[in-house]
Amino acid sequence: MSYVPPHLRNSSSTTTTTTSTTTTRASSGTLDTDRSKLSYSSNSHFNNDNSSAASFIPHSRCPMPLAGWKPSERVLRMKPEQIEEVCLRLNLDVSVSPDSAPAPPPIESFTDMCLHPSIMKDIAFHGYTMPTPIQAQAMPVALSGRDLLGCAETGSGKTAAFAIPMIQHCLAQPPIQRGDGPLALVLAPTRELAQQIEEEVKAFSKSLESFKTAIVVGGTNIAEQRSELRAGVNIVLTECLTWVLNRRLER
Image (cartoon, rainbow, N blue to C red; front, side, top):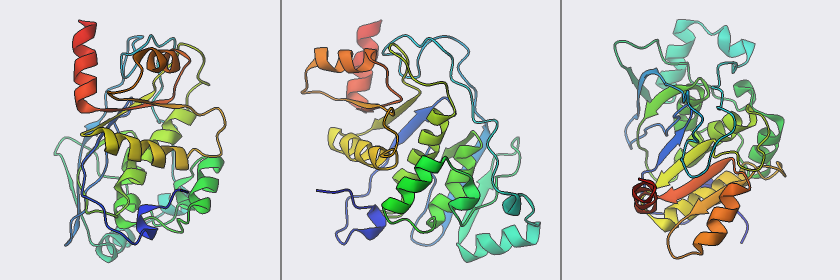
């Protein structure tokens, strides 16, 4: 069965919450049935050692943050009253911690997000024409390397809101070689959800032949999983229990 984006699916799915951890710690934004509610904290701290984000295998190079990302000039020229108008139209409710800089403005066009050409190709291929409210606000925050916390209703595009910036982050790093990675880690509450998220990550990296993901869950061959990880991966997806057990075994 071919991949169908959430906003184009007829059947509803169970509301889920995921935690996405990259070296920029870009998590999903929040949206409820009344208003899009997002909260932000100060800029993330990046790894300064040589361990990987998931600590499964050694990392030969420390990933670099998305410090160089900028939206289009049109977005940069937006005036405060224009930003406020967009927030009102998208029904956004944004809160920022007192010690943080203002949140990046919402962006209503994928083109204005200045994403990698391959990501743009896959976005168009899967039927996305414009960001949903949660994506419009959450993606610029994640692409800026800011911490982001939230939840959203089913079918609002939460997974893409953190998956696309996560892929963009990976593409900003040197090419993955054997023994490298992961550059990003996704923790899901269940095995099934981890598999669903991997499907969506693959959908938005479809045009990238060398882009590698690995799913680490119980009930599968450990030797095969280790071999896959040691070959070098960009993103690892796993269920929380499997992650905790692996961490305990490392001690």
